[in-house]
Image (cartoon, rainbow, N blue to C red; front, side, top):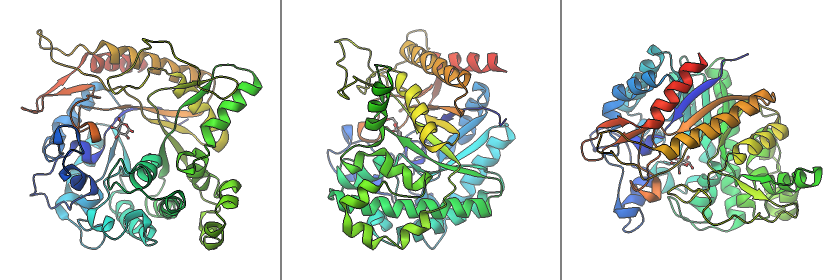
Length: 438
Ligand code: BGC
């Protein structure tokens, strides 16, 4: 059996920073930050935690933590400032140094190609709406595979397709903030599916022995009534939302089963007709593993209605309810339907942490959260569910999208004035847990 990966996760835009001298092109999130009153406190990610310059210190923090893997994303516009065409050597070199530094410490790199920071110049040409999107993405992934593929064997193509499509092109809440209709969003999704399929093929060919998957977020429904009927109702809610921009099966079936759910083709006849030839490119797809980003849980009654929660239920600062049943049932539902090994690619809690008078960060809530979720992972493994890794979101506090710096997810506290890193109690808890695993 492959070794179980215990790691931490981050994403390029949230941690790297860019002072304008690094040759990185603008991404849609840079533009979003420039829009007044869009991000809390009008924050931006020009410095964030300056990982670009402090990556060695951050690798050292991971090594001391004792993780054996690190999931990070490459910034598309750091490598290709315009998205396609000219490469930025400084960017190429940065990820070379990061990857080599990880390997020197025995930390397996897990590379995400797309964590929402679409190059602005490609967005100007329609981004995911443009039928050329798969071609652009394939150029980027071909570079990743041929340049880093000798050292990186674990890949995630798209982080949270629901946010990449629904939040960014339909609900308009994430960059670039478009509000398209359902069918137009379906086209965006289709271009993502084709890009994913092409990338998996490229990775298999060029990065020999590599595996690839997608990191999916869901609405975390789970049954509270454990009868076959109760479980079936929850499973259906989990996969088949009526609004297709929320429907997990529409995002995942093409990536793992090589086809769209029939109800979508019945509903959008023009789409079905116009994609008939291209949909063949999805058939026979060999996506190797599942990724699951999970933060909460949503209990359902046998009727499919959400079970009501009593007042005072434990929640994070971001308002998400602490409930590891989401991890448990989501893992079961996903591995059952797609029959692939699963990595929990993100699991964490956003809190208002601070440095106490003793100079330490006592994040008791996060310690308990980790304890609950790690216990759940152990339970799944005991039940022989094919789970092969668990990554905490996140290594350190960072730019939390619309919330700016108002909410902290790290195992390591970052002082945003001095950029000093201080491991929190949760870091030491996880360190001890990992030591005991050895
Ligand atoms: C995203 C991360 C984000 C985290 C916490 C996930 O949806 O992939 O980028 O920081 O949730 O909100």
